[in-house]
Image 1 (cartoon, rainbow, N blue to C red):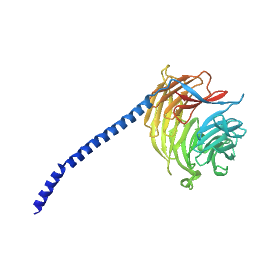
Image 2 (cartoon, one colour):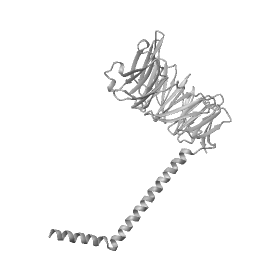
Image 3 (cartoon, rainbow, N blue to C red):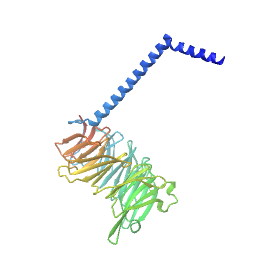
Image 4 (tube, rainbow, N blue to C red):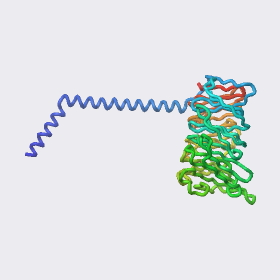
Length: 398
């Protein structure tokens, strides 16, 4: 009986499949699959076309979309901040929307240094004792350090760290945005050596410092990590890790690319550290020749080397934070400044500028009519602020 039932079910199934409704349904589904496949293929082709267009697109010139005039004798510098422009000098700082001044604060500094992180900006007077803290809404606090400032950095919550130097001692002092002292760390030069550079993590809890010690006519370098949170609470001087693989190589560049990743560049190697409670080496690569310049953003580290060719005096190499090489190009422009500009690399001197993609495509090249003091990338890879002695111009590549 069971066999009879199975035979009847199979027959009914075959009959159902052969009905006009079933055949129509199968035809509709087949056509639908074909249409969906064609739509997906078209979308992929459009995405590929856009990618290839952006990758190989070049620009012949630029147009000026806005101007900022400067007073006679004024020597100002500019930086992008929170979608607008900051103008600062020895006499004060202004927040600008084009020619409109949103706010203006005065101070007196001989050598103002600016650092920006997320919503906060600080201005420190190098070799003096004053630091001013700002947001897009204006001034938020002031700091007076115990000793002269060598360098200052600000974190995303407004926490400021300052490297201070005295005769035989250096200090690291950390302040909140209201100017209250949170941490004061003393380091004897005879014990740690001379601090070359430091960087504060975006969360304000970690710090990397490179030191060089001179003894018996030779030098020794090391990189030291500090933690101002709970992991460093019970550590001597809040030191959570020390790395000495550099030996006699100077380490002039250290920087946090994010709160858990730091990069150190010595004369002959680049090192990426993973910075948790106990920092460790994540990647390290040695290279031949001394790096002439170092530039970086959140995702990439760039190195500049002298090249043997007279026509192309520099070689530019770009790594991601995993030290995978993304660019290795000879450059013909004898540039003074190099920086990342969105997905590209911007190189310039006082008269000429070159923008090159990380794939080696020359996107833009120009010679300016007047001497340029700076070129600042803005929100997109086609917008820049070009500054001269008497004015600044916002330009758009076309």
